[in-house]
Image 1 (spheres, rainbow, N blue to C red):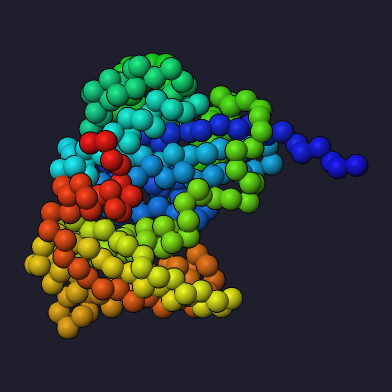
Image 2: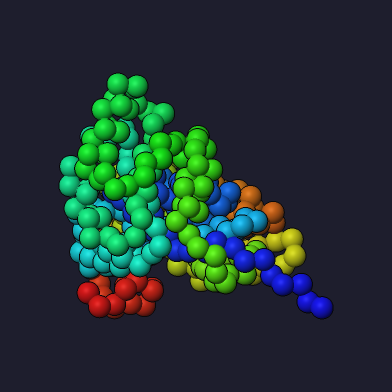
Length: 298
């Protein structure tokens, strides 16, 4: 007789908040593996990533949204629209606040119409003094009194477990949405592209990373090795020179860092071949955006 599958608490959870507040870091720490680009620069996340957390009694599907920011062209408008959709389509909304910055006085406006439970992830508390901590925490409580607050530092793994516990309190038992060994609804090639983009974000000059799009052209994979061929798109010839670097030093650095990261993800020997291309003003080019999988009704 087939053993009846144990029912788990199941639900969709949206990570929402300002750019660079730590949403992607929280997701990566919860999953224990990096599926989303993370850097100290804002606007890193480009689309709503679903990361799937499974344990003995729950399956939590996390949606990591692009951070809220002043939009740049059509791409920026798409990102803000995706955040708004995800905000209103979940069982629990986790609003991530960067404790090291002044409290955003209007953040309660972002979530006041939400019909689901709200958890404030008061993140990066390791970067502030105790008096600052107390003052900003009280501000958050007064701005959004209906929310549960979890004080945490994702980068240091502090209170990640508490956040998961608080989320579970709002979920009900149900059928699994995804297989219990699945960590993302995105393909491996998407994750490879995100890793390469992260290495660009970390190593390039301030303005260049936001004009970068990574397209995986081909992946040749065996049991022990992976060869990845990818194009890096930028918007200007001057940016192409920066990405390549003097005597090719920067592009080799990006390749090496990406190979090491993907090796850590897969356990295989990785070789990456990158080609830099210029597509002028691609972030405002509807044809390019459609072709590369960004939203359409803009």
